[in-house]
Amino acid sequence: MAKSEKPTIFHAEHTPLKVTFLVFSGSSIMCVASAIDPLRAANRISGETLFDFKLVSMTGEPAVTTCGLPVAVSGRFDARDVADMVVVIAGFGTQNYATAVLLAGLRQAARSARAVGGVEAGTWLVGRAGLLEGRAATTHWEDMEDFSAAFPGTDVRPDRYVIDGPVFTSGGAAPTFDLMLHLIRSRLGMAVALDVASVFIYDQSRASTDAQPLVSLGRLDGYDPRLAQSIRLMEAHVDQPLPVATVARRAGVTPRTLENIFSKSIGETPGAYYLRLRLNAARRLVVDTRVPLADVAARTGFSSAATFSRAFSNSFGKAPSQFRRN
Image (cartoon, rainbow, N blue to C red; front, side, top):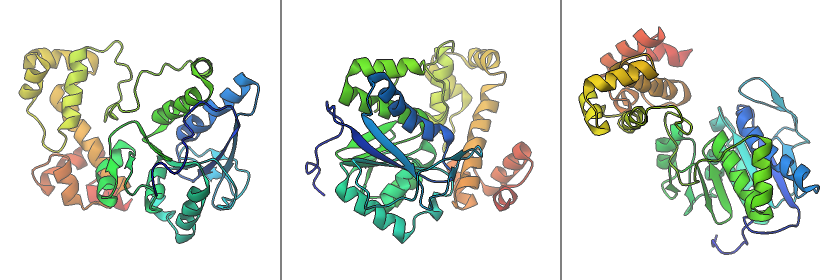
């Protein structure tokens, strides 16, 4: 597919944009809201239906989000329906949804749509359909390594969202809101985009190319910048943990000062926080992936499977193997 064959939807255009949101059970309600509500607000502010959107599911039944709230849909996904923009929203359980019927449907929809993309784990389904081959893309930071391995022909980036020609991908709820604001701003102008942001008291402080943080600290208002720098160092070295003294030196403070900063801001030592950060990353891999436990230990900086299992059990009350079975 040539990148220049379809005109982008991200440009000034006042004609209505037909949007189909394909929502799967296991999605985050925040991802669904971040995708839909900015467009709903833009319609209200402009007084016109400039984003003509509908929600569908594969079965025609409501999609049940991770918090248990169902998302009402207007019917089944039909790849023959004409849409300018097709958005796939998914979360947990995505591996179970990549059926031949779905993937063929996405490819068919992409041929007629002007743009197609995925939100959070929806990026996996777009990729499985072959629509990310030769493109730049992103996904949620938890899946970045596995996503890169699964799609070697894709330029996987840690950005908040990526637009590459007629294909777009977003890493999560907040980046999706940013993406929709960008769409509104591109099509309807800055004034409408600012009005939409004001409806939600939303202050967009990140660019699309900003890396997704492992630990979200918002705009860091009220935080000691040395704390933020230290946490960023820790998250960048989960697989090969830095000594606390090295973290302190790179943050420009003594180990004692760093301990005081962590104690005041977080209530625990830098070492304890670093271990918790690594164990939380390990828990996500244990629960949400099929990565062998020995590889989970290596990815999260433990010298042996036994050391990892002991630390995991102490923190979560069960061995990693038991946690995965449950």
